[in-house]
Amino acid sequence: MQAKVVIVGSLNMDLVTRAPRLPRAGETLAGQSFVTVPGGKGANQAVAAARLGARVAMIGCVGEDAYGEQLRAALLAEGIDCQAVTSITGESTGVALIVVDDSSQNAIVIVAGGNGRVTSGVVERFDELLSGADVIICQLEVPMAAVGHVLKRGHELGKTVILNPAPASEPLPAQWYAWIDYLIPNESEASALTGLPVDSVATADAAATALLASGVSKVIVTLGEHGALFATRAHSQHFPAPRVKPIDTTAAGDTFVGGFAAALADGKSESDAIRFGQVAAALSVTRSGAQPSIPTFDEVQSYQP
Ligand code: RIB
Image (cartoon, rainbow, N blue to C red):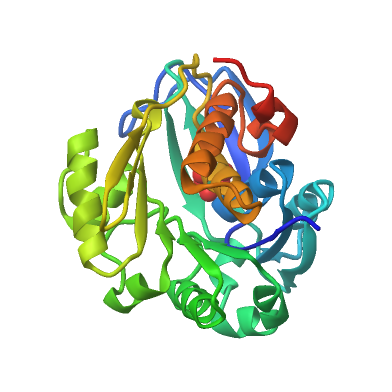
């Protein structure tokens, strides 16, 4: 039986434009292409965990509209349990307006829509999914009250609880830290959570030390092409990133989180799960779009540096 990963989080339709560079304030730029692509940090992590070997269920909300149906269909096509993907009458589905430039960097504006309607009450209706999970993952594209509820409940149930604090603009509620087994911020999120500058392995280590002092068990700071820093109270270790030519970094972090969770749930060691997530994320940046860029288990297994 495959291990079970449950994701509580966002589903967005990504409206993606490629342009030579990101626009400046007040500027109109001619784009090179436009596509709509299934995304949202929660849904991306669900797809990553499913393609990378886990049995997955998603808890989230969409509007009663065409985007909501398309996002649900995209998850169902991956074999993801969508019984807890709830349609909200009169609400629109979440969207993300994304510009990707020629150097593969992106800028994203999200409009929450149905994601803003994920409450503790919605999550409580699907408590049996949390009870049946091996690993539970949250991000911050749904309301904080719901995230806090899931972290606390996951901890009470003795599950492995992962928080990817994305996006983050301020420190987390102090009581959350004790409920989290793995906190997985990127550089800017680690900086927002700690107030420390994070732009290198050494500064990531300092931020991880501050987060560990707040009570979280383990921290993985993802550093893009510079790899990842894994830290516990006993030790820290840098994992260099596989070298690839990036096309689009959208959902690379989500692919890492989903891949790490799937590997961990499958019984891999933390080190092996980190390396597995890194290869998956590296492959994802060589392709365009959020969910379409996420590799399969076999692609990761057969990756040759
Ligand atoms: O992490 C990438 C995701 O962030 C995109 O798919 C977009 O929907 C935003 O939520």
